[in-house]
Image 1 (cartoon, helix red, strand yellow):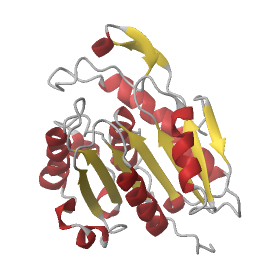
Image 2: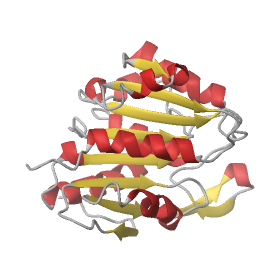
Image 3: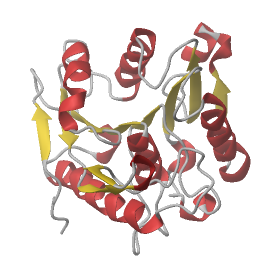
Length: 255
């Protein structure tokens, strides 16, 4: 039985609870950083419970070993150094416990979304799409979807060996600012291309506008860039996120 060891906040639904979104923050933030977004989306998704965990504190190399809340260590934002795989996999186990707690409480895994920003985006890819080699004897979760906001693909050289059997059928919404100075837009696009070329996920680019958004909720990655946006989520991305969530965990669920 999984034991939840992460501290977390909860924003309760305002009607019958039939879906859960777990929001995974970036370096130096904590679950409270998601409160403005959950407040913005709550009225459109009244059936959703929002779970907002806080990462453990650890020294982060890229920030001069300062102790910050982080899911794993990052040597630099060039992403060329050896990755902190042990830290990543430890955080996967902690996030797994949050998902399992929702499932144990009666929410089907197909009604749960993992949503992450920046380093949290890397974590939800590993937690949501990972499986066989990430969890001992496990095949991963069959989630409603995964949301990556200004994130990147972790463990790129071995990600194919980690994927869950459910990964190819899972909807992924990926939003990224074109002027992001930390996690570069080109690196985000390259990460999505790896999921397509090496893992086999369908990939749809957001330069088609509404034609692309019409595919929200379909299996594969919907990658949308936001012109002029830095390392943040603009109002258009938040609106696109709301539309994605309404499609993958609609309010008309009765099961």
